[in-house]
Length: 361
Image: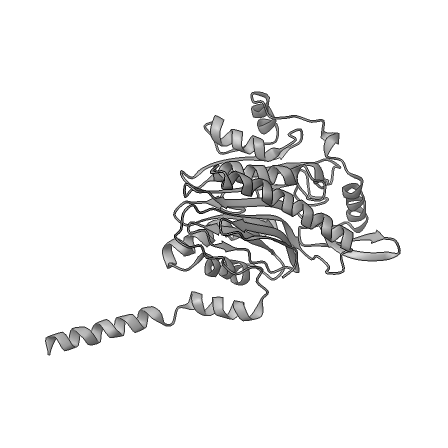
């Protein structure tokens, strides 16, 4: 009789543990109401294992984008993804992989980072970047830099060659003086396209966030295009180490000195070998308020949910529709890239032969 009651109690506890989970209920509701980019790409236990995901910004991206422009973005994403994947395939570190991918996008004027950075209200460029090592929680970040060709390179220098985490504006430039990072005149970041964006923003008295609309003309046709705000990469290497990197030019016509989520640990960037690596893109202020990148890993650690469940829950239930998205790689090689905006420039690859770049769902 005593053993009978033990069995009954265990049965009741099991039912309680497996039902009524509000997180899973909200996740299932979000699953039915929102567009998800990619499902998890689960990896087997076979070694070696690696996985990488990149993004070039999320927002209102019209599916009427001209074919040649769409192809240009897809080719650029493929180049950045391949650069990181080749490092992982050769047994290199996740840190080297994410830095390489982000650096290529910083050099590409299609993206709002590095060469393609937007203008502030003062007609200048202020760049932010961060990189994080999931093996030891080391992080380096810079904010408001104006003469650093590749801010992600300086961010890594901060992580590896200083006793600090984040340097901003003149302090970051001063720190760079003692390193071998490549410097450029601020005019290097000037592009006609971004200047025209600034002029339109000034005329409208607007500050363009990452998810705002922008029009451009090809021939006699007008198209909507998002002011993409961020680039990023996350990766798992063959040694089981995770890393994340994010870089941005901010938002068009932003007030001088404004800093978004990209250089803020836990908001726009986070990596922990115990859970996942995250890079965010979207409305920076909202990602800071909700500590988005860390929230995803915390749900995994404390709630025991999968990477995809955690990422979707935060994007669809904590943020507002259109706020943006994340790319994420789990410690098991799973990949999740949910977003609540019209589209997100992104790509993913792994050691099982998956290689994919996309803009829309």
